[in-house]
Image 1 (cartoon, each protein chain N blue to C red):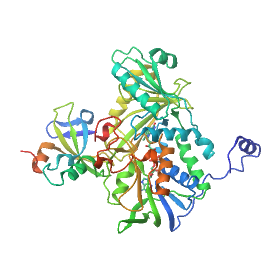
Image 2: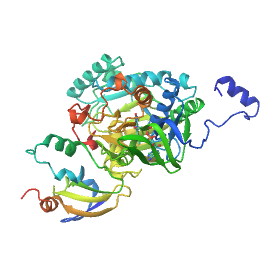
Image 3: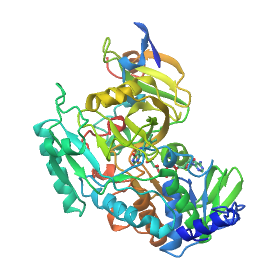
Length: 95
Length: 416
Ligand SMILES: Cc1cc2nc3c(=O)[nH]c(=O)nc-3n(C[C@H](O)[C@H](O)[C@H](O)COP(=O)(O)OP(=O)(O)OC[C@H]3O[C@@H](n4cnc5c(N)ncnc54)[C@H](O)[C@@H]3O)c2cc1C
């Protein structure tokens, strides 16, 4: 797989490791009353779709940035690559 | 028809005209007592034990392709019961005992070969960990033998003992481990179940569940709706997308594992050998091919094929323990999609929907579990309570904090 890094251009997939579903960006609020239930779902349950999947990849043998890659789990086609930090800011996480 | 040496002799003398198809091709009935979704090893074993142990035969196994087209026909055929944790080890040891009597039980040659499995260690701390595992296995009634370097030199003189980075210091062996002809397991269980009246329906994909007021009353399929009192899902790598049709999210991700076979060679490798400092395992088939594999690719996928970085990684592992493997030519390679659970252990459980049952999360180790998985799933379906050795394999264990994490890596399916 070739991942088109937003800053570095096309890079070999072997330079990256995959963490999993990009929903891991949205860590629940630990102060909410049902935090235990929310953390259970956040940590353990997955949509695991056959088709388009947004997922977190880490450029371990590169610039060490986290990316959100949109990839088809049936064909391995990658349609979108963004910096995870941009996605997180857009979704209201972090400053 | 019973198979026997006499039968082969007789058919040989009479022109092989008396052999019959091994199972029927029935049309689906409108209703069954139980429907098993997925005609892999586990689904077929479940049907077989429901019929033989529990006397239930008004049962259908629905398979979207042909039986054996999934992982049961794609794996590297290794069987072993060298687990450690109390929630797992008695289950896998039951499986080993069932393998030992399987061929006589279902009257089919599955080529169960207890040629032994050897896990190599490369450092003192790893030796300590293996001693602990060996003891845990013995506590559950399994066999284990600790070997020093000389013991291993005797068995496998061709290993790279003095590798500069990962010298081989010894190994933990399970002599009762080994290999089994994987497709024959599917065929043997299918034949046994069919003979007792179970309908095995191929080319019948389950496309939805009929759920009314929290009760599952049947399935929608590519060959029409079928009603059932109990619906037992058993679709391995497809677990996520099938259970999504019942509105469930699972503690499972689907990943691909690749396998490799070399050209046929003279007898070389005595049993199964695994590398302790990387992920590589190898055995030799009776046809002479070296059968080997390693890690999963590490990203979610439902495509039954992998990518080159893992091919390289597996081959490096092979070169590190037995450099002579570099002279063998690769004949074929393939991939299978597997249901990687959040703690690396499986599930055999009811769901919160009455009448809907789930069996999955087998990761890349479910072939060895086939007999016990069928045995325990049949028990759950027949008695509505878990079998004692599968009592820990529950869907709610993450909510309760009762994970069964053999590797201790946490909720990271691609590391299990
Ligand atoms: C390359 C590789 C190597 C492996 N090596 C080993 C090993 O050495 N030792 C070991 O113990 N394990 C190994 N495994 C794991 C083992 O093969 C699996 O865990 C096990 O086979 C899964 O159970 P099963 O046989 O029931 O799965 P499968 O054979 O995959 O059965 C599931 C069936 O469900 C069907 N299905 C899916 N969706 C539907 C639907 N909607 N409707 C109807 N049917 C459906 C599929 O077509 C399939 O036939 C390996 C796996 C792979 C891929």
